[in-house]
Image (cartoon, rainbow, N blue to C red; front, side):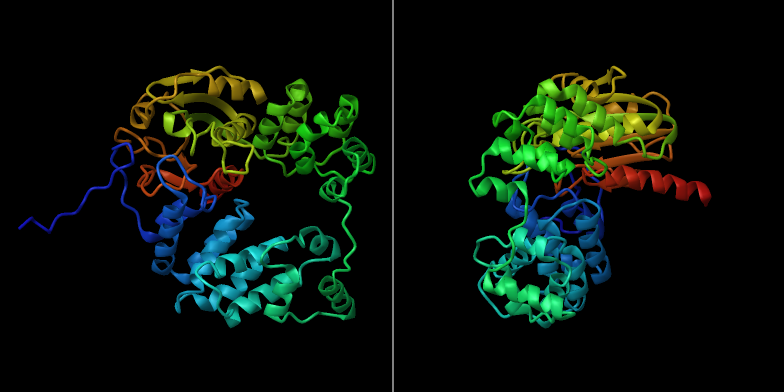
Length: 442
């Protein structure tokens, strides 16, 4: 018979030696860059969702709950945290934290209906007491504007959620509001979605919303193409950019907007860079390595392929956005890309840095190990990658060495002596800044 007392080695999808990690770390890498059900370059969305389901009961309940909150609050993911809580509800060891966790991660009214759709994915069933408690807690957060904005047609309406969770109003005013919801008498919110779906002239609607300063920074960027197609004057758009609030908008949103409005790149770049002014700085010499290999550049987890079926952004946009942030927050930084080769990128800023990164070299293999070995001397090394290296990745030579994983693939190389982070949100950079401050104080 074949020998059984053998520890199987782990490898990336490209054959490089991967690091063996515990269930907690495996759950983090599966979740924090996960757009639920979306196919990636190497793995299907169902496969990733199933792996999350299998890992949840293997990890301490408190840690799972904290991960769900982090995924929603820090990484701004919507569906993956709901899926985690759905899996928690299936296990006796975890279901006691479902109510508190669900109440924390639901930040939009429509997420309550989406959670029930996930809860009933395998057939309709009664809601547990913990689920009712979590939904009731969440329901009490929302005012009339939010409820009206997200009370959309679907298998589950917000009134259905209210009936099912038996939420108790905190006062007479909230009781009256919920009665309006039940009776379908909520006042329609004055949003661009309502204005346009109601048949209003698109140009007039956008001009009015801008004149009244009712178009938020993110909504403005998402609708830039629509405004231009509706012949909204470019002068009006430029003027609104001067007053819109872009404080919490990440650079890759500007990158995506610039694809549809190249004539507005100078203004978009200006507000993007200004939005980064308040970032704390990282002292010393930083090396940034950006993965531009085929697995991150072809469709289905491509950095040029969309983040999701409904997204106008790609993972390359996210990586370039993080690179743009680091270019602004690092005292001294050199940017390199790697695929088959290691190539230094010209010291550009903003959209010019995006162009330099994406056009730096052909998109072929993932030779991260060779890139790390060839890095110049530095105080800090930051790698953006899906970790699917062809070759063996050495341990870093400096303490401040970070592997930022932007995919949900099962195995990765950036553990051991590396400081490992998952996700493509600005939160990874904020964490990095705070982490170094903490280490310095110790």
